[in-house]
Length: 273
Image (cartoon, rainbow, N blue to C red; front, side, top):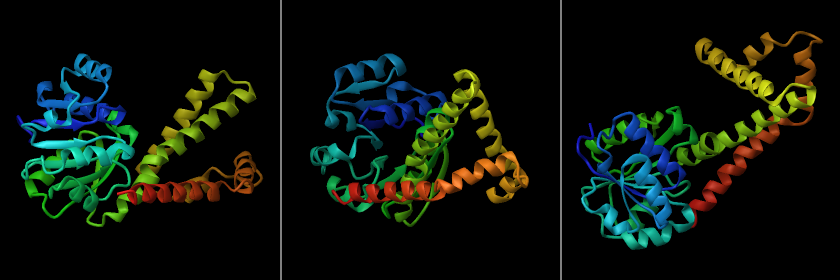
């Protein structure tokens, strides 16, 4: 689908590298030299060249030359200066894909003086092809460019398109930040296993397989989590005792507040532009 289209990555950090790795390993991009990455850190550029065979530069302007797709993969804190540098310099027929949290399409279009913009929000699981990405496109994005976006995002995992851009802020809080919340829960489970007397390796294996199996069961049965939870909660039993402590500790409220706070922070970052 992408053929010999050149892709420029503005920013070669962790998420940018994950996407590059997936595009090459899945053969969505068959020639590493079709990817050009700009990053201000020369050691980072050298790492990407050696690891993936892509071309690199410390100049954003140089990176976009000849590119058909430009991926914005910088931190929100430096986006303003990056957009000022690129404003009016991206060819009108180029597709711009942003993976920057909280920054709206209108702000990107205005900051770059560019009409064809797709806003996405992938999460860290893109590294293993199980990412979740919600995306939305400006009205100037063509059907061909929308298809190109899908090809790229499907290499990362599941992609969900929405016409209502507001859902991207929600997905940032629930799906992107949510991975951090899940890892904290996993860490707590492992620590509890160690406290009981298991080795850390044993506790990790048990925790990961327990969580993976629970998720698979829910996918396969499509049952509500409360139904599955009730199936393992016997009156006066072990699970009931543990669940009582979770409820007493306000687990539901704490999780909901964490997601809502992440949403608020996402909106704060977007208001900077």
